[in-house]
Image 1 (tube, protein in one colour):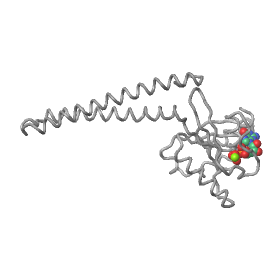
Image 2: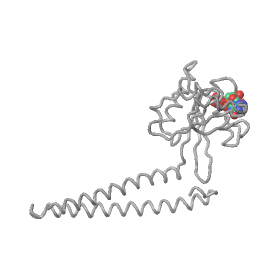
Image 3: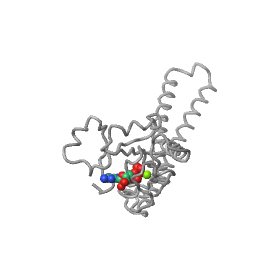
Length: 228
Ligand SMILES: Nc1nc2c(ncn2[C@@H]2O[C@H](COP(=O)(O)OP(=O)(O)O)[C@@H](O)[C@H]2O)c(=O)[nH]1
Ligand SMILES: [Mg+2]
């Protein structure tokens, strides 16, 4: 699926995925009906027939159904992501380069980039396809104590989107690495995949990064400006 490089490829792969999913649902549904009728039959006959082996049989079958359902939930998520796109939210402190990265990834200057912190206030989104996977990329207002109500509303929207994202990318300015990720409320990311991105590597001259490694929490290093 991930290797499908064109829209047509994605469509074909999706159809296959949907077909496999509905087959699996029908299979589990049959299993549930079978074990239900077996249990009802046992209840209809005399109590002596409800022996340990029958109970063990039912428990075993129910456990297998549970496993199948867990698998289905996982596949459903994959299918949903392939159909409507994974929501990937770029968040982080002001001025770390979220809008620059957003523009670089969508290949157009949609978001205003400025050295003035607090430039991005509303959400901006764009649909892109990376390796055949549709992605709704969302640029957000920088997380900080807001300077006014409008910025506060933008930050609240950013937090709401972080909660519903499939993946949150925290963009940090690598030259201010010690103050950045602390702005993110970890409770927001409890259920969401998150990745740290350290931006503006072009500003770091050789060797200096090592000295800062105490702050480096692992993640990807990039320069949204130069494409490094
Ligand atoms: N040197 C350098 N500057 C960057 C990079 N990414 C963004 N900037 C600059 O940082 C400032 C803030 O960028 P912006 O994308 O508006 O940050 P945002 O507030 O996180 O959206 C602008 O002056 C950008 O040109 C980068 O990778 N390297
Ligand atoms: Mg911005």
